[in-house]
Length: 206
Image (cartoon, rainbow, N blue to C red):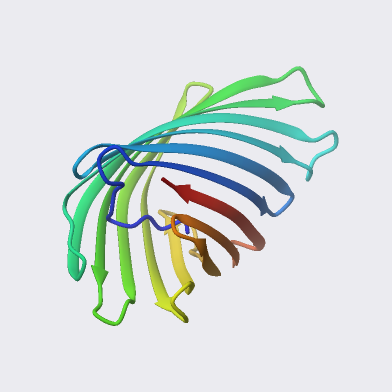
């Protein structure tokens, strides 16, 4: 899900996540590593690669990111509250021209999750995103609302709506399946702002 939950790994626990995505004509892949540093504190690092085939020749994007999530209030039922900070750097190479430039991003997001006794969960995100491209800064408020509905003991239906200031919202629907303890597979499809997008992923917590 694009919407993040207000929850962290246990201290000393690790996770690996791999995703393949398509957003309009851009195909991407991402590998993320996370670790529970302290109770309520989690750190993540990620690498990403993408190709925008909407142009000929395609534009290549190579990114790396770093994030910290802090959730001091965590409950199995009721509200959990926290926040996260993410830093990103993306190298953009346009093969049609000699143009090579970088994008630097900083995102601060407040996180809230309400977990119901029947296993459902509601996730709320609100934040601010700043991107610097070729010396120009672009700032926008961000938001997201996500919901998880258990269908079976292993299978969950996910739905979400998210967006940012001065743009229409994106909407997505997906499934998450727990293959074994700590190992989950997920798929999602969505539409928004005149284009379709999709994602498939595998996550392992250990």
